[in-house]
Length: 301
Ligand SMILES: NC(=O)c1ccc[n+]([C@@H]2O[C@H](COP(=O)([O-])OP(=O)(O)OC[C@H]3O[C@@H](n4cnc5c(N)ncnc54)[C@H](OP(=O)(O)O)[C@@H]3O)[C@@H](O)[C@H]2O)c1
Image (cartoon, rainbow, N blue to C red; front, side):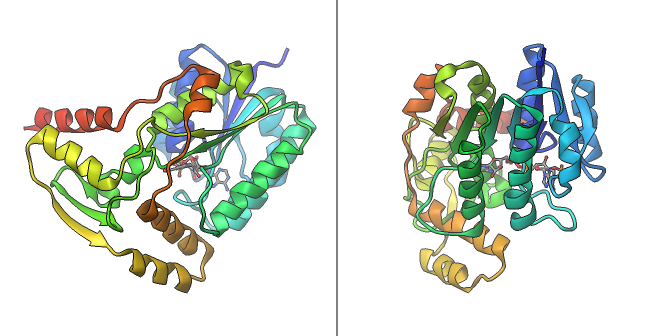
């Protein structure tokens, strides 16, 4: 009987957490890795008892072995951050993911979970790729699909690496900082991705994932200020500047990253309740993240 779950994107932030949850439940997991994947991440997968198979979304011939004998497949892969020569939105996020859907269908995979993102009003290449893969998966004939559409990951977008520097109590806000989003922890997205395998209400469904509360970046600054007692220094990246950058960007990745920032500036709440009800899961709150980060800071003093 088929019982393996294959994770494509396992060396990434979300895919690694998904592998961790699956292994913690004692389930057999296979991960697709590349010769260029970060060795520490590959070693962690191996130590967790994950079976490793070499493959690349750009090499459709490698996908057969990755899908072979798998009951379920979860794909989180994207070229937006972890890029090698030849990786692009076109070759990985679009053509590679389409090839993976086809390989999974041919191999008889019963359930395909695809991590996309919540719809945004702006049209840009990464969103075009995600929607095309969603459509292809829905029409693929694979018996079960789950399309997860998370909003922005808390730990990524509200982090010092992206200018939200709780270590130094300063932030570069995108736009006015009032655009409201249902931020979600990547750990919660991982729990939803794994939960989708077992909850029939998540089968053949498109589910938006977000925290229950929609907050602007300024609201999150206030939460940090209240919890830590430190006043923050703020700068703003004007919405108009972003619009000009977006209009001027010709390279697909640059255009996509600017579009994501523009959406962050404008905000766009989603309805996370259907996913929560389908899987009986409740995402953590941004204030839980604030609490963790501030107590981590006091632990360093
Ligand atoms: N960050 C957010 O706020 C956010 C919000 C909503 C949705 N999402 C979605 O969440 C998903 C997971 O994001 P993440 O932060 O976990 O991404 P990540 O950390 O950048 O991981 C990307 C993964 O994709 C793999 N990959 C890239 N090119 C590949 C190729 N040619 N063949 C095979 N694998 C390839 C990478 O493998 P290597 O290690 O080998 O390079 C890595 O495992 C993405 O689909 C993203 O669009 C993210």
